[in-house]
Length: 375
Image 1 (cartoon, rainbow, N blue to C red):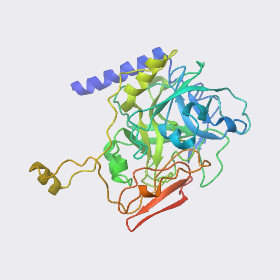
Image 2: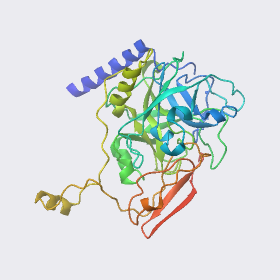
Image 3: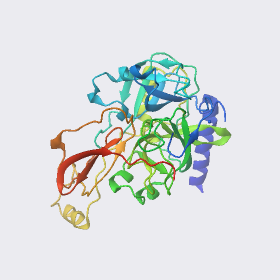
Image 4: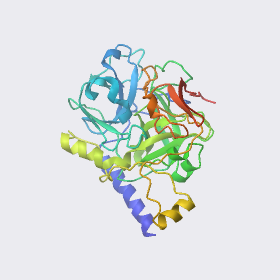
């Protein structure tokens, strides 16, 4: 059919554009929960975002991916606004980090600016994407960007220095694991709360039986697919999840192809210095999701008695969601008056803490997350 041919042509153009741009080429053929250690510089585009005060120990706060010789793609929630420092002063961009315990003397570079997606909502985590610009160009191979609005389903690879066991220290070696990117329908049928499984501009991925997942410390890192010729394309950014590696609870990732307009705009405005951008431009910022109307509400709205709800709430018994940043940082505590009985929490929190909401109580209890190891 014409649609099938268009799909094949798109894939071919993406592949040859990637070859021309020299992106997504691994340096060689080496924790992610349920993962394995990564050999030296297999993923030259991986960036570890490390606080300047943690360079001696190489404690990784977030991950990122080089997409041009000067631009790093990561998650917006890695740059909380209440941390005091300006975003570009929060981290150094560390390259060639394979064993953070035994080889800490690796190149690191300052950030000159950080652009957070203007459509980012820290409460819902819609638009959880940021582009950090390095002070200088670097000689590393970038990962390829996907074509505009293109969503690839199937096997993918996640990498990072995040937790591998419950409440355990971070691993010394970078970890990698294979997971599956689910379709929108598969994600909606998973155990994730509906307002998160259908969140616009996101994809979900994992293993249905559990045991393999991104986790604390992996935030902002890539989920990537392997195309013809072994070319890697970044499809998503680690954003949040309900625990780690739990059965039928996939992790949620920012869908990179949905934000090509924002990403390409930053690259164009600051100069790519060489690059890996392939495909088109992205759509406008994704709107905040709203719950479906009930049949009665549809009927009343049709008669003009009910106006669209611009600030919807969702019934909830108890949700346990959290972002996947550095578990050793202080948790982000919201104001007490931001909680109300019987309403969806609206946003998860960084590190190993999460907040629990119950319909019968407005109290917030900070507890440790239930990150699971390999099963």
